[in-house]
Length: 166
Image (tube, rainbow, N blue to C red; front, top):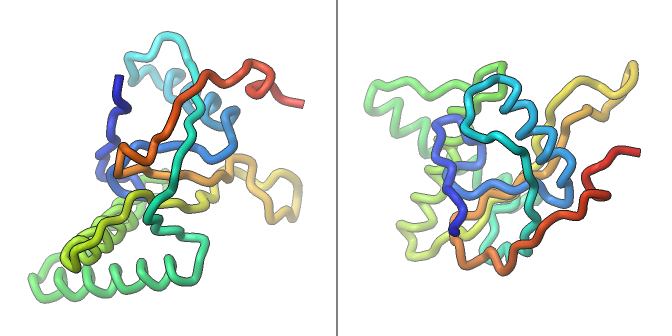
């Protein structure tokens, strides 16, 4: 069964199939949080692992990736300013409409030049500091949004011992 593409207007890396990089426990915690809100058909949480070839990756942990996103923002801002429309806004509750719109603009620019981005990868800083004065937040993770399903090379069941805490 193919993965479901997430296309929410707040998906910070744009449309794609979302994965936590090397962090199955955070994936399990996330689905458990979603289930606790009662807004999902999920009855039994599960985590799968995947082997992903990043292919042509918009990597937001590189200077080139950051520059591409900056250009995407400037392009989007100019287009909306010309049209007399407002930019989307990121919300405090982690809904990232502005970031999504900018990433989608980057995809449009790249596609207009005859290329495509297969994956988008970035650090998501989330949660409270893990101790007073900490620069580390409890739920920070790396996410990958896969736009090209051919980049998903294999899928496997995550062993239970990888989902347990210390």
